[in-house]
Amino acid sequence: MFCRRAVKEDIEDIREIAVQSWHDTYEELIPRKTQDAFLEKAYNVRQLEKRLQRSNIFVCEKAGRVIGFAGYFQETPNAAEVSAIYVLPGAQREGVGSALMRHLWAHMQNVNEVHVDVEAGNEKAESFYKQRGFREESEFDEVFEGHPLRTKRFRLKLQEQS
Image 1 (cartoon, rainbow, N blue to C red):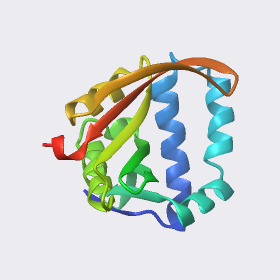
Image 2 (image 1 turned 90 degrees about the vertical axis):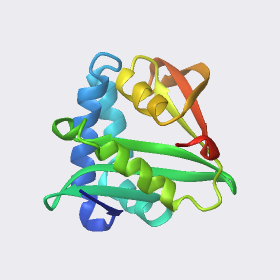
Image 3 (image 1 turned 90 degrees about the horizontal axis):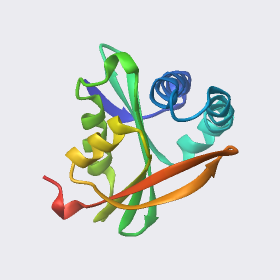
């Protein structure tokens, strides 16, 4: 398994991973029509080209195939938000998410606090972040593409990381 910074040639793989992961993860939480509207808006080729230029997006490969991606952005000089960690459903539970998380941490300069938002009911993600030392900080309601959601915010102080 090998993680690296994403490049333009990875866009179609990133799009496919996003679609498969969203459909697998959110099928019971977010209506498919809402998922697809978001995916088309956030993961179209033009949007991903922009994100690659101004964000920190990484992919993970296994046997030459991109099987996961992750991204973060700097909120303040010392705080960052994990914006995505998605792994192909067939490659989950093989350490890909952990490898991507380590890769994110290695690239976060001077960051001592990281947060991530997880939709309530996404038990796989909640468990993933809790196992890495994130603690639930708050819960809030939001409207996502016209669909009401309950979201949990998790926070990690990096010096607490094991």
